[in-house]
Length: 227
Image 1 (cartoon, rainbow, N blue to C red):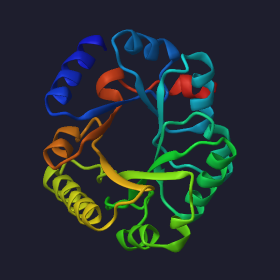
Image 2 (image 1 turned 45 degrees about the vertical axis):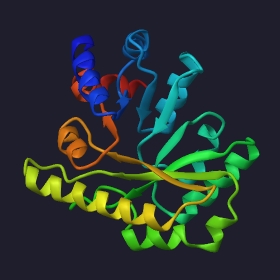
Image 3 (image 1 turned 60 degrees about the horizontal axis):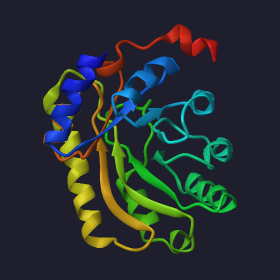
């Protein structure tokens, strides 16, 4: 794990790309090992697992929620989550704003955009994203900061298809940056790329990648069943 991390981190640093180490299904001991190597940004998919790990690890960790988030679970992570990467509806955005307000925080989020040719993956369509950004409702939310976009490409070995999906999201991201800029809209982060496709994503303009198995190894599903 250590050598994989060092090699990948060096490659990403040279390209000024931020690494989120996706620790889902991996024990706290694996996270502690990377903490000692200087990695401080970690991503989790499930609120329950995130809460468990957060209670056992240093409060200095920058936690990202990268999986689908249900509105009724926002309150549990609102006090400490650094970035919610998977906002896919106005309903969820409103709840995040409400819970952040209760915690006297401004919550950073990314809008998850649907780019994959897979019904199982979440995300909003581009027109929905655009309408939210220009809405009066968003303008009234004082505890939200929209930092950028996130997208998950189709899980396929067809690299041309994956590249096209990333390229399309980068184009949309650039178009939004030209139109929207305010105290609550700062489109600086484009989160694209996972273990199987992160190099393509970086080539197409990603400045944040979410890497799990390529660093930690295969997922520990038995550990996941325990929690």
